[in-house]
Image (cartoon, rainbow, N blue to C red):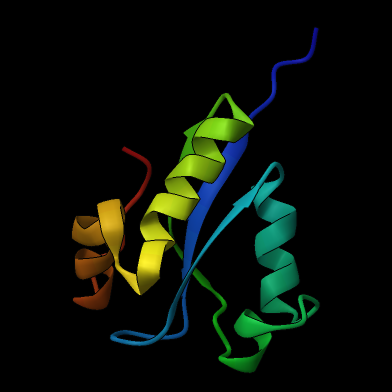
Amino acid sequence: MRDHVYYVYILASQRNGTLYVGVTNDLIRRVQEHREGLVPGFTKRYRVKVLVYFEVHQEISEAIAREKGSNAGGAIGSFSLSKQKIRNGLTCGPS
């Protein structure tokens, strides 16, 4: 049986810039797609390309819940401390 790994990640456009939260099962591929502008939509439009944070989850439902919780109503949600550190120029790794 294959172990599944899912990532919740935060990309930034620049310091104090636009942030994007996403979920993927292949972090390296997905970040490369964002950097090369291969992903149409928000990240391409606002040039959100720099990986500043990620978390690892074993269950897709947990990863999606974490992503959705951080985006609820446009609020920063449970990523607030991490996002504040990112906006202040302090990058975070997985906790």
